[in-house]
Image (cartoon, rainbow, N blue to C red):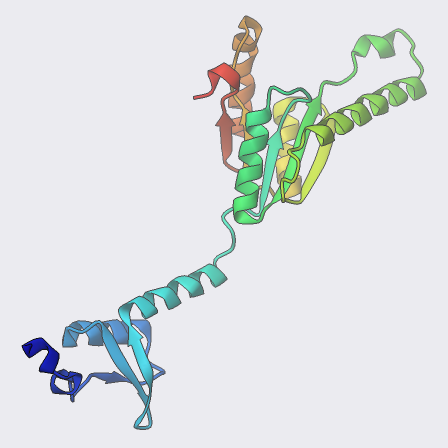
Length: 219
């Protein structure tokens, strides 16, 4: 019965703390702390404009930071094979690129043609045609492996050379902020070669390297 009879006018605060619209975050937060309130009346030339709360201030700061700060990654490079063993690398790279609105570069490094072909007198134009066919086949296979509806701008690159050296060079050329590679090892030969390759990529890369496990070796 008593609560029903109490009106808001009886509890209104007449000396509500005010602040001008030009006040900064620090001034507004300091005034709230000094007055032990969580909101202030914004007044301009004795004209009330509205109320600002602590939550409003924090929201404004977060929105300003989001507008000023660039995405965490502008370009992500995924170094993959042409088979299905790097699906986790694909998924990880696509998810990171989508999260930050980044460009995705899908890279595959082919080993150079065997030197014995040139030594055995195979004509240069034939070697060039073989190399181009290998490259186009890899490009086509990589394009088919890209997740459908990834929702990120993706570029497929196929190059020849040493894996670590070319990955580092392509990451630099693409302006990559992150390199994603597969690090799972399933065979004894992989154990012999994999660690050195991964370590070399990490050493040479101009940006951070994310090593993603593959298949049963994912950790």
